[in-house]
Image (cartoon, rainbow, N blue to C red):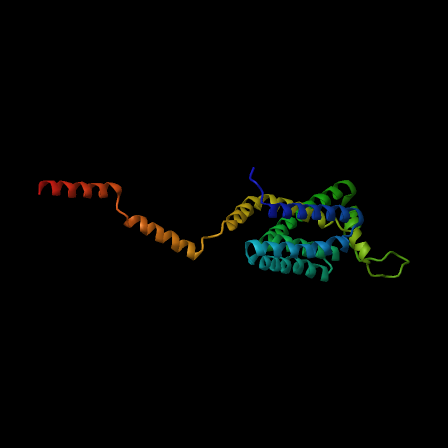
Length: 235
């Protein structure tokens, strides 16, 4: 097992705890509170600022792109009625921590998990309750019961028909993506810590090497002296 860099260890602990808490909260209360997502959002920018100071300003750019993709996509889904506001803020805060590449990976993996899980839940509902029972529980028919006035479906009713919460697949996807990418990220951060030599240092090293190359070998000096002594003796 590789030694995890402290910066990546912080990323794993923060993202893991955040997504796990959001998943439990969303599962129990069908909501993700602002007191969880908003502080995590600002903490993510502080984290990326520190990463940029230590390893390069591209980390802030990656965080901005990740937020644009994660928050932007979920905002569009919420705007058309395909998700909750808490889900938007969850992905917005998480994307700042993860950056662009990991955010895209989490979105892809979580979408696959949602598709597979939804198919399993619906098939299970059909097996135990039949098609009509499944439709009544999960699908909006748009029909108003006899004797009642037509009313628009409330947000709570929409949430109640959801097959599953969004935070749970995001949490699982985040853990899987981090586990998969950690060796690469750890190697990358370690390589960035090895700062390249400055031009002055390189010039000094090159000058020293040239000096060593121009110095005659000790054997050559000794040989030259011996030849000079022998020449004097013959004279």
